[in-house]
Image (cartoon, rainbow, N blue to C red):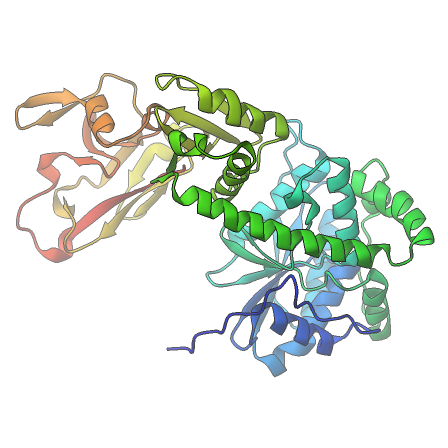
Length: 463
């Protein structure tokens, strides 16, 4: 058994001071200050092939043998620019030169819901990167001091609160993955000097000069003017972001304290939220929504949630929606969930459970048969080929005293109305074999069969 890794120091306050030159020795100290000992760590770099990520890859590769960590890279091909495939090949070639495995991930950027190209590309990129991370692996990005300044300025222009103005943290959690940004104290010029001394090539994306994009406009027009007047603008903005990051963590701790009296399983009790002041209520809800992996609502929707939604009659079922998320109320309970995904299609509804024990559902969840000697499913009795669909309404289940309505079962299990629509039904021909992991037809359970031939059905919900 490996020794327990000691807790690292506070990443916001213990960032190593940048020397006059960026090099592997500084990076070693920085990484140790952020995550502790590096031995046996699994590091994965989001590698664009541009100057910033090339500098970080080179320095990491130089440290790898001495510090004994595992290193690999992921390159995302957004398939937007005609040269995208060429950049992907160049990135792989540079990684090979450093003996670092590099995988190319091709994504499709969807701007169909009104998102900007910048925002849609970022969403697609991070979804691809997170999906390819291994268990325990840390994702590194090469954001540097000027990136932090641009992020702060963008947050100001959007009217962001403390969370947005604290910009990027050196260590953060993103969709249950740990994200590291070790270069935040480093100036871009230092990275360029480091690569130039090594004679290491990098790619330049011509879209970085397109001033129609907000970040490019800041980088090429606004930031040079700021630095002409205030040469240390990037460093001082980063310092302000770190102070705001500390404030944000204190607010999150306060929010958790307020949430402790309001939590009711996966929901919050409206009556408990009403007892908080308006500011406490907003802060607690932001913390709760964020921990659910959802984007925080804008100011107008937060006012709607904290006002009319919480003040509605108990028999009302109000809903507030925003980018990819929604809040729903049922009686005294408030639920946060992702917007409903498409339901199963015929192509994915067939389930050969012997070949594929886990079935991903169109609603974002999954069904899985897990072998368990104490499980209630007799595998020998289960048909080889099953199908999975959602409710049409009016389904009835056999019981000891005749049939009873499926909706009664779902109510008894505590599922709120909008969750009931996404309960998967496991079928054989037209007969219901199981209702998710909530009910099993008698002929497929019970009995005294061998323990090795038993399993349990596990339903992972999308919300």
